Length: 91
Image 1 (cartoon, rainbow, N blue to C red):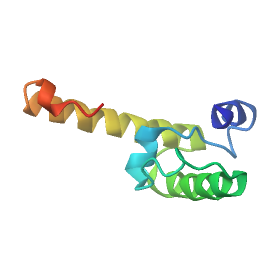
Image 2 (image 1 turned 45 degrees about the horizontal axis):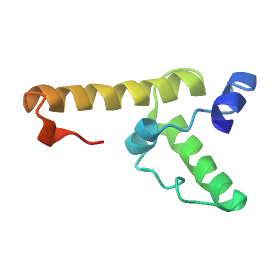
Image 3 (image 1 turned 90 degrees about the horizontal axis):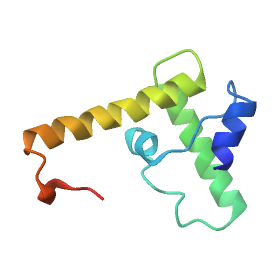
Image 4 (image 1 turned 30 degrees about the vertical axis):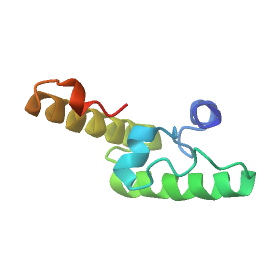
């Protein structure tokens, strides 16, 4: 939630930390179980750098939205391929 607020206030500097975008960067859900602020911040900075490298667009927000959309597209393609079967649920 903090990353979303920072993204609204400073869109050129921050990006929303989202599990879909994180998966696209290879970062996965590394920050979920972290409790130390320093560990969370270091992981977020690494994530932000990867979004900037991999994402497409001119702003950080456009780049993270691109990665989110790419993840959704890949999931939809997988669902179509497997006929939207319950066995394919990732949740």
